[in-house]
Amino acid sequence: MNRLTSMRLCARRISNTRPLSRLPSLHAPASPLTHAFPRMASTAFQFAEGEDVQQLTRHADALLQQGWAQDGDGMGITKTFHFKSYFKAVAFVNMIAAESASKKHHPTMTVRIGSVDVHWTTHRPRGFTQKDVTMAQHCDQSASLMGAVDPGQGLKCGPTV
Image 1: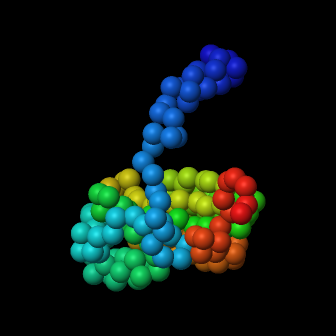
Image 2: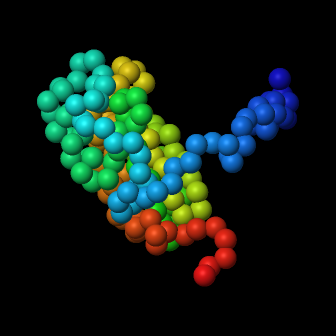
């Protein structure tokens, strides 16, 4: 299969996905730099096999205090970072991408015009791990360097009022 055929197949797969308007919404900001995600007590985290549960619980509690939220299945954490420009949002993604490549631990990220959703979880072994904690801390540091702002101050689409 040549490169052009491969690209056409990929484009067909993408065009057959659900439109963004039907995807679940992540609205209602809870605290600075975050959207409201369902929060659970850190005791509900599903830690990966072989992890130091007591130490990881302390780290998870600290992250929850810093605006991170546990994901729906308790296997990871998520946070939305807001920026005053699309360029800053993309630069933040690049900072995370560079570090995640060096650590061989990659997040799921959604980029919008003035915000980035970041989700960390470990797939092998399945569950919440120290890798997730380390990379979440890196995200917080990178967001600070890139000038993350409160949700109401982030860039939005449409005309300004």
